[in-house]
Amino acid sequence: MLQFSRSKITLIVATIFMAMLLALPNIFTDERTSNFPPFIPSQKVNLGLDLQGGSHLLLEVDTESIKSEKIDDLSFDLRRMLKKNDFKYGNLKIIDDSIKFKLNNSELAKNVSDEIKKLSQSISQNALSSQSKSNLNVEINNSLVNISLTEDYLKQISISAVNQSIEIVRRRIDELGTREPTIQKQGTTRILIQLPGLDDPERIKSLLGQTAKLTFKLVDQKASYDPSNPTKIPVGSELLPSDSDFNFKYIVKKKVMVGGENLVDAQPGFDPQTNEPVVNFRFDRIGAKKFGKVTKANIGKPFAIILDNKVVSAPVIRDAILGGSGQISGGFSAEEAADLAVLLRAGALPAPLIILEERSVGPDLGADSVFAGKIAALIGFVAVIIFMVLIYRAFGFFADIALILNLVMVLGVLSLLQATLTLPGIAGIILTIGMAVDANVLIFERIKEELRNGSSVINAIDSGYKRALSTILDANITTLIAASILFFMGSGPVKGFSVTLAIGIFTSVFTAFTVTRMMISIYISRKKPKELKL
Image (cartoon, rainbow, N blue to C red; front, top):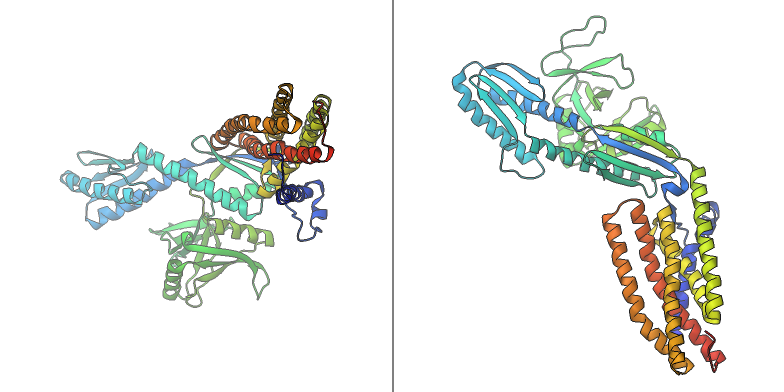
């Protein structure tokens, strides 16, 4: 067991050398690593929010707005259904999240109830999960009708909105190139965001504060807005403000001609004629077909581009746009055009996000944390090295070399995985120092026991490693199981601790068992000692 072939030694040395190369960039600045030769990795360990500073945001999804939107949609569908079936009614209003109206003939109540059930089935088909029961509460008292959404349905759309918001927030932040952001659900309607190293939190807040709901509607040319003499808005139209001039308003048709859900790409650019920043967009096949049909049928009419209920621009359609591509201009700056493109590419939020809490962790705090972590690791490291040399002499020295290599390998693996190192992660690394040495102590004590029983030097070392292996594996496997549970069940800092702990388990078993055994084998084969001083 103490015999190591040349190929095995080469493989072990190559593994250690690769770990050193991976860990090397962490001791240099970004400027220096950018000048490294291509064969040397330049990836570093990402520092978490508690180590390098950054932004901490707690957001809440405005589920009340979703409820209002669903009620408005239901009201629109209900009016259309009543008109289609020629049901005479009056005084249809939305009051306290429910729709109330009065039938002109109470005998129509049964027929109206049946049609409302069909409407409820249509809502169920549009829901994320199929439901056999109705999503509407319907109360008909003589000719008075009261309709509201069920609690189960409201809960379902709320959960769906939060999950969708998390995904869209992740896309928007990833588009900016922020490294290792933490984005997770907190409670039922809240989203926690941590952005290490972010130096422009206001830009992130601006990006997350916009719903980015893009729609295209026709401008109502039968009416015009005059602030000095406001006129009644025609039925089927609505009044929307201009994005660039809040005092100016447009009267547009309520009907959405093309929706932003058909958008597949948006990129910032410059208008070749005016050289002003614009956003070039492109629709999918369905959106391109809709866009071409609408522009072809409405040549010469203004077409409003609406973002979050504000008219960005309302250009006149000069010709049919059949390619599915278009351009949005609105007096943007280059950065505003880039941010709008990010928003459109990531998709619209299902509901507005409310910033409940905002915290900034300064870089000084991060530097103090890193320094404190280094000091703690150094003290523990030096104490263990001195202890091992004093107790086990030459073998303790080999264990110390393996311990140094263990730390290098942990750092190398973290760099390779682009993992985020936090304060709990540093605690996990410090814990692996003790675990790595613990394995060597167990092996050396086994060797001492064999020597006391009269075994030769080679047999004692061979037997000590063999007998200690099963114990080392048992102890580390149980710790690995605990680390896995922490990773899958925990979040944030707990995950950081479990990652470094798990990596440390593998590297410590390799260095404490394989590397020290190789060094002891080389030492014994060269020195050929008659006895060991342990």
